[in-house]
Length: 286
Image 1 (cartoon, rainbow, N blue to C red):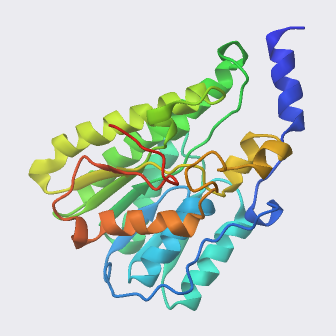
Image 2: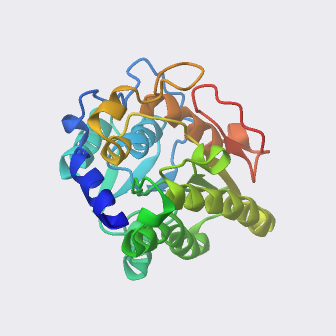
């Protein structure tokens, strides 16, 4: 049997989870007990991958704290519209922009639309990502490898390039990396490689933009209940999602979002080039 035949069989066994409602465990994207204090009042935030999972939770929390939010998403209209409805419920304002950030032209268009609508960007959250499960390095398909780097790394650079001229002093850039950048993952080799690149990019960009007084930090989540995570492994594996962490469970998107709020707000005014680790207790040295 050829290596790619094994991969194809594995992919057929994986659940086609494209929305939160298809998940057996409904992720918590909104902490209803959170009491806003206006930490982001008057701010404009652009969030990629904001239609579901962590990005959705971040968008909702930012809106609660007073930010106007642009939510970019690729697929999952239902999840994105649910985010929009929740933001409206809390008295916030959002703009949904659907599109594929693996395309450079769209990345630049995304920023342009944000500027046309809101005039500037105070907070850029580069959160969108994709991953493909494979049993070994021999199973990695070139087209999947290219797309993983386009979405996870290239798009982050393209969007940031376009956004910086519209970001005033005191702005914040937050990049989503992963625990896999530090621990590695035997079945997510290319994905882990992109997340390691994001750590290096975050540290380098922070040094590059310090003179502009734009802070650049990252968040490295561990296992979290998201559609992307559920689409990467088979149904049996998903039942045990996060059980290998010290807290012995996966995290909720709403448990990760406060890390982004902290980095986006004045509370983190003396932090740049750093990465926060909401990962269920895994010890990270680096």
